[in-house]
Picture 1: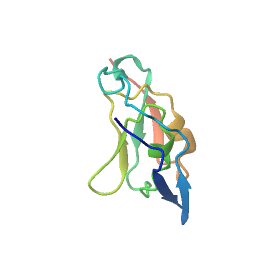
Picture 2: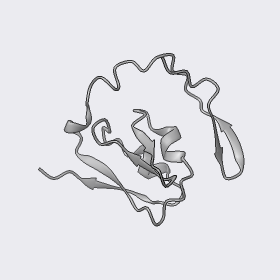
Picture 3: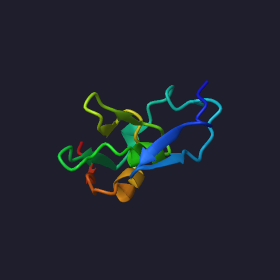
Picture 4: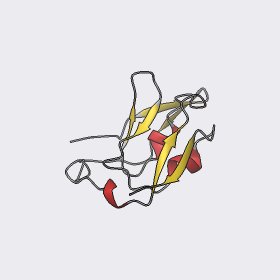
Amino acid sequence: MIDFENVKLKVNDKEITIGAVLRSDGSTRKNKTGAWRSKRPVVDFERCTGCGVCWSLCPEGCIEKRSDGKFEADLDYCKGCGICANECPRKAITMVMEEK
């Protein structure tokens, strides 16, 4: 069970509480849902500052922190909604068309 009720994130020197409260992980990690998306997020790691805005707003919870402190979507679970790209303050995420 995952409980995000007290998860805090520091953004631009302000501590914010994540708004969603998840009492369980549901089926998100049991079902790979990324195969049907039409666009995928691509991160420009030179522009990314590791602020975590993308991670905090991802409705699928598929964005993970890398060892270098920057974030990247797990494409097995990303549905390609584009919220991360739209909300990134550095515009470091671009949505690109999937190729077959």
